[in-house]
Image (cartoon, each protein chain N blue to C red):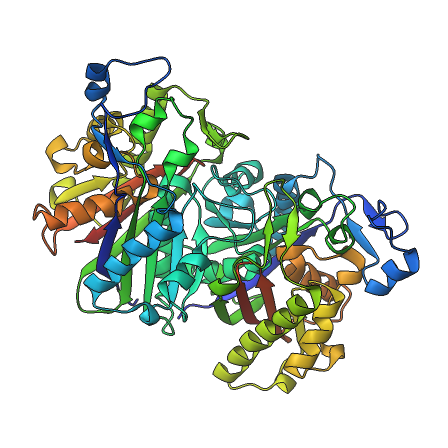
Length: 313
Length: 313
């Protein structure tokens, strides 16, 4: 089977990053010290000029630059986005157009916070076709538009986009090794966006954290087992960083040392589907993650959909 | 490369099928004779008990029965649906759960009326992975919920679901030969679902028909050329049947004899993404399309996304 290489990564964070002290007051009010204890210190809040399309295009351009490719080199473009999703049309074609990726077919991927990993698996499938050589998966979400003002969710979520370029048999970049996708439709309704357009939970935070921890551990174990690896062989775990609680749950359920679990959640908030590529980008840039190291990523998304990926940085 | 075989097909049409005489009055009123001249004579209107999920599950069960498989045999389930699409969660997991396809991962595919063909291409990609053996693509749309009551669109669209089971190297059923996917993001905004939830056109019907005809001809030509075929080698063209006008446009732009273009548009209306599998099912059932015959299908979807597929029945 042909290999998919990860040859470019790009991130866009909104110009405005809001500290807990600057965060619009919650209702009921929460003291600053308690907000700080949650473990999320800043989050980006996009302006109207930084919509899902604009953020996606910025992240995509940076990823293409790192890959030393131009938009016209792309055979396809997949957009993981749930915060501006419409009945019709898809949003991905607007990114394709704004980026100038005229040769690329483009469509939306849902799967909420697990959308980036579902997108990677789709991209890997297309790259098995000798006709296609390069594709991009972008995750872009403006979550601040989907949180009721004053709700605790405004503390947790941040706006951002992140993009990854994949190239078939590139003999460069990281290597996409394996993936695992699962769905538990019985849990479809635990959270939703209501008619008013804001996120609503029908599950307690503690239960959600435990479910997320179990789900992430499940896909990670499946990947390790199938690839005859132990956790020791993995250099870093870069999970979807839902909340600070999820990190602890992953450590607990997977039995991984916390020091192996990388997240930039405190600095950028839960940036939904963009969280894994955004963290990978950050930790590569500061030199913690080095080229060739083995990374295990996993994400959960409302649906209930969960996914894992094994790759080298 | 492993082959993807088309081993089961199923369709669900709503219990209530409405003739032009029974159609709720249009505003402004249109005489019955003029309605009949449009060429769409009946369309299904789903009840609340026939939602997107219920219709999808019914079509899926029939497709599984034809394939002599059970839901637990499925490795994945893709749902092309735009009429009940939400921010979160995806709808596909509800179909997975209701169907009892516990082992299958499931997610939504958008791409409007071209969603079934985009879904087939994704499924074909997954089936390149030796871990997966069988998957399903379902298209289910309740368009009657997305048309302003009294609008001319209520004449054109019908509710329906259709499902196809794909199996890797099955040595039975039809064979998925090739596909072509394209996107023109510059035309993203020609039609949309407005805030009120109803379809709105920003393009004249004649222009839309010409664009659809050109787009369908473009992907068909690309498929024929790449596979070194002429139209003579193709037994039938089964296009997405948008409107009666689109059929004529396809004949004109592709230079195909109208007798080769199969559609059941007059009997069921434009059933969006389900139109190609629903027509294939119908014409196989009545014996017009015979096993092994070469079929060329193509669809256009708001986005602007268009797609073609070459396969045997």
